[in-house]
Length: 416
Image (cartoon, rainbow, N blue to C red; front, side, top):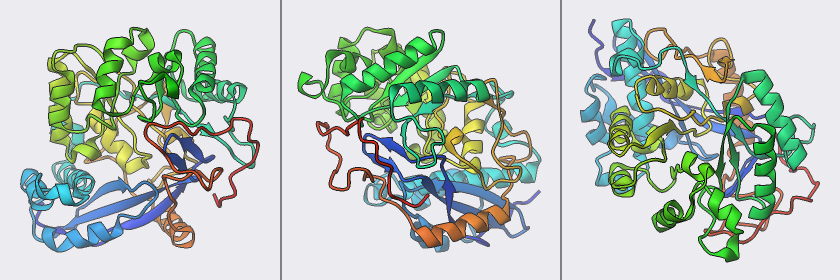
């Protein structure tokens, strides 16, 4: 079946999706919602492929609009040519097209899968885990005015994790840190470890800790998933010998391309690489990075960016074809209250989400929901990802030494 050329019927949609509560992190906060850009690519014979991109609380609409004239008439099967057309490796040092390429590439793969009547995972390779991809429970320091799922303190975090494990079957957990002083966060982490002795736990301060004792206790250093910069990662790898660090050596904000992947892991077996396909720009990049990791006996996980169902579907298809995907995938999905795909939120079963088995990505837009959340975006606008609504005069430092107060009982004065 001929797939024809690409055309843009609905070039991009900005939409909000509500979170149960604001999610605080080391570099700011998700202010009670995610802002996502939904892309539709239509061929001349009427097939529509879906893509999705985040923007750290900001719109990517202008970026996709600028690419439209470059893509009209392009064959969606010529993926590598599209890469150099819009995200030449040298030119991309001066723009933000790499993430846009990832969204567009999966829209093209969605088109090809629909045209050929097979799931994307079958196009990429014979599936390694077609039944489902394990997800982890991402634990953030949440505060909400209505009390839903609050986890600002140790007992609340443990209670929230216990409820999520009961509902969804999680056996892997990752605590987002870097907000409070490391000594306090390690207290919370130990409480979680005590509550789930048979589960896998990771600690992620988003690269804001230092190797200096000035910025955190030795226990925080040993438990850290990512310190600041590649030098910090090397020091951490050699100095930290606990099982915690071995299981959670991710570094997905530092090791983000093929050069840094090869350099970082050469000669250092073990550990984990959390791959962001939207940073790598394409599915082949994801698989090539996984191949580098396989060479050095590094386990792989798929990283989250606060995705809705379209990008989650891409993550599931990628997870199905990477043989060394030995760690549960990151996800914010359990924090969402709704989705913009038909059928609503995807279902968890035993801590996993099944790989969609329909043609292409296997998901379709719920246009009523898309319109609803697009209107919400028009009303509320974006939000500053790198600001904390409970600390209006604060800005993130790397490494950080300005911690939030865990005793602050205020609620964020922001619209949800």
